[in-house]
Length: 140
Length: 140
DNA sequence: CATATAGGGGATAAATTTATCCCTACACCA
DNA sequence: TGGTGTAGGGATAAATTTATCCCCTATATG
Image (tube, rainbow over all chains, first blue to last red; front, side):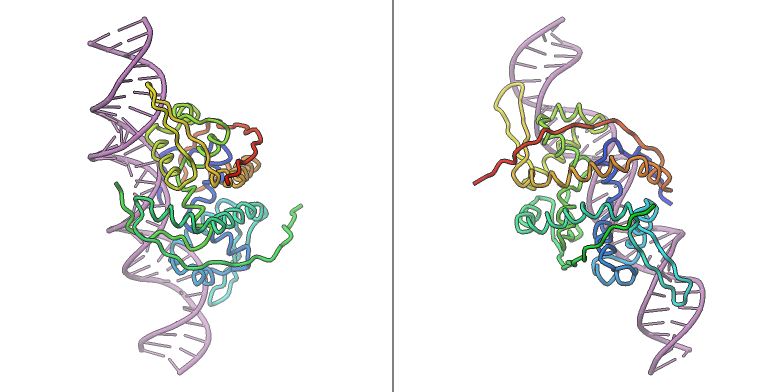
């Protein structure tokens, strides 16, 4: 496995949070899981741009960081379900805010991002979902 | 300049926002600017772990994305001041939330992040600041 | 003249993250 | 028997991001 060579910067809350959300599909995965897309195969269908491998890797990191939980059902064919932990749920306001901000400013952002010098191409594919309001489970 | 070879994923709001905040120091820079740390040299002093080069690059990207504005005073020695644009200010609730979430969960996160298999070392150095409440300037 | 301040940026190396490819296991269906 | 669905992960290549180094402008100071 890959081992980090540079000290990870975790000086302020921003960097800590960034580290947790750091991964191309992590916010999208959390959003999906929060809306009951629990199984890997569903997620894979939901994000046509992602490969199975990447989702596995990022889910594993989220699990390692205590943000999601994985339940493996001892069946065949195998069945796995992910769910948010309490701390994972507490991230959702941020995920929601990011989602809303991006959507609210989509036309502007698409313009500036596309005109940005280093951009070649962009790919779009809707991943909109609506999470029903859920009472965050209280542990304790 | 570097040119992207893979299509950038901007399907949902999450990915758009992620793209804007994508950069090791961008959230921290926005936070700093929002608290009146306007000049490059101040920022450099504020983030001991960052080099001038990286900050320049990331500030330039933020500028290109319309999140910050740069004012160059035609003086010698040169003087430059950055400020948030309206859309930049509208990001601050997200930045604040990320900062608060990270700080609120610091002890837990430090543990899981440090125990995460690929981590070697971490570096800390406070970057706490308190932004006074500011009325977001209304353009129009 | 050397050094410091203040700001910008090219070139290149190193680190990190994503993408590709391929293989495992088992059950069910035609 | 051969294909499909479900899930996991090693190995390696490619892409992207950060880090290092070095150079430039111009003034003021020791």
